[in-house]
Length: 288
Image 1: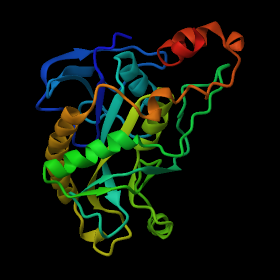
Image 2 (image 1 turned 90 degrees about the horizontal axis):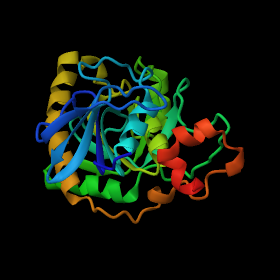
Image 3 (image 1 turned 45 degrees about the vertical axis):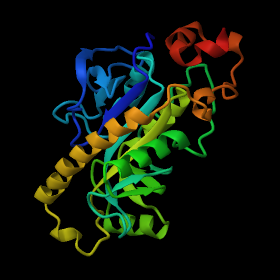
Image 4 (image 1 turned 90 degrees about the vertical axis):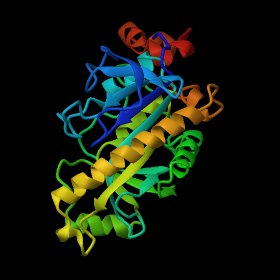
């Protein structure tokens, strides 16, 4: 781990690059969990070194269920990242979240079925606290950045993470609304869980592209309309992320930075040597 980038940016549907990034170079990283979606683009944004990753790969090659979440997050850790800012397209489950609005959720609800969401196992057991899955500091910074660039933003709310790649049935969409859920997407929960295990701060800038199928006007929504919203959201997201990067402090005082301090259950002498070596960027400081 070379510590060259403190900030990681994960771009979702429609956000495959950061136009403002300068001094850029591709950085290929091989992790114990395989290869990330693409090489990271390392560069300078608002005077700070950042690493950008197109979540679905350039050209959008991987579905949400195919993503190697562990490699994506572990690769950022290997580059020295402390803060992970994610941008993600979502559907709205409430009337007040209008297409092209932004939401900074503070909770997640898991509806996935077939994804690996932990770095641990294989002889090493750890249980991190996850009651508050979004870093309060990073979420507040993202919210302030949204306001600063003039975006309509909502702070707080619950993101339902569904398996996909199909969208919800009408019955599912109505159920999520009855539960009080706010927005729905297919990618962020695994990233948030893994970032917490890796002691990185995580927050999502959720970009509303359309109302989910519960809405009476849903059937009049066309693919062209959704793509137009994706393009508009992408431009807004780049402005928000750049502003947020300029606001982030170098020193972290949040609990994310010590999430593993009391989480590792396995006795150190019982942890397999291979696991110790592979997870050294995450657990090394607790085993020395």
